[in-house]
Length: 461
Image 1 (cartoon, one colour):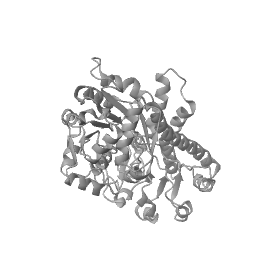
Image 2 (image 1 turned 120 degrees about the vertical axis):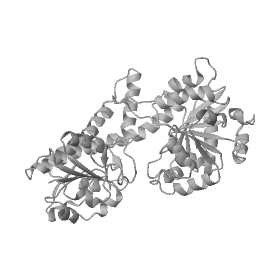
Image 3 (image 1 turned 30 degrees about the vertical axis):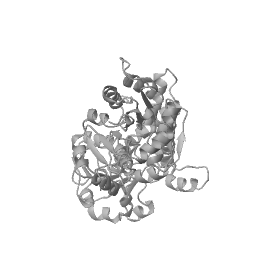
Image 4 (image 1 turned 135 degrees about the horizontal axis):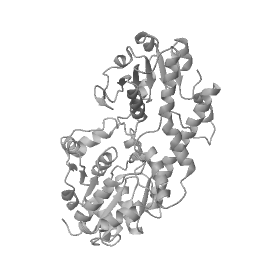
């Protein structure tokens, strides 16, 4: 490797810009999943030779054979095809080789939870050890993964430095954060429009990250005083949503009993300038919101500080919503003297959010598990999971196959094309149609006109 390239943290701003324009800065993106792969694609599109690293051999082979794995990300496939064709992006499972070829390492690794709701940073810690072993001296490490405040300073840096002090942060390598902020299903749009946070262990690392990201993304870069503040901002924005969804879910449970339609309330409330609308549902899933709330809680616990009560209670509310959904189902079946045990339940949508192929921490999983314990026959239709196994159930090829002969339909995801479903289909294919709509897909008046038995979260019946 060019000696100058191995010393990126020693270069001045004009030298960095020159290296960027000459494609002399080489990048490895470790973790090429939902966010990491689009990140690697955009870095490659900017002209920088980029290596994607992942332990998933099948994913690596797909990428190297020009098979794009994220068809639910509009506009990204065309860019992917171009950078693969021009050999600006390659993928590998060999992190040792990748780190030997680059002087910028971007970590886009998952940070899930354990079964006890403790953040699991094992992937980052494992890669941190490999960085210690194989990183080129004077390289830059950028963490995009969402972590709690203090993780970089207190855990990751000591791992990279190692007990042998092979490296020293700020001297023989530099490190900082630029937390990802993209919304699954809208990643390219968000990459083009959403500001990014930049925080480093010192001014030099922040400057380097800003120069590199300015070359790749035409968005504002918000300078944070350090890594932990940048990570705190990222968590704050997502926990805000989790808490507000819990607030609306709690109102929804009350309004059901009062005969008030939560969606009518929200439609009027959102017209006030300072009200930011959130919607109720069968639970909050995905790799971000639930995890981020527990990261904040864990941050308090690990520092022997009081647990944030509002966040903790919000988690409890949102985690109870799958059980409330099942109670609505049981209530509707009871209204026609039908027992939920051994009934046939059709599920419409299993993704954790609309318009993406992703079931991470989806509320559907808990609901399906409970239905299995009741010996229910479960049928699933989701346009993103056709004729495939989801939660150990083979999904249906057509929506009609899911509806036909079901005792009740549970709507768990608000995919856009569900809004065009003609509710008359339920009368045609079900003996006594029951619809449990947890996402406000259907108009109550229309379902009542069709004499469909209806229950919905936050909706009168």
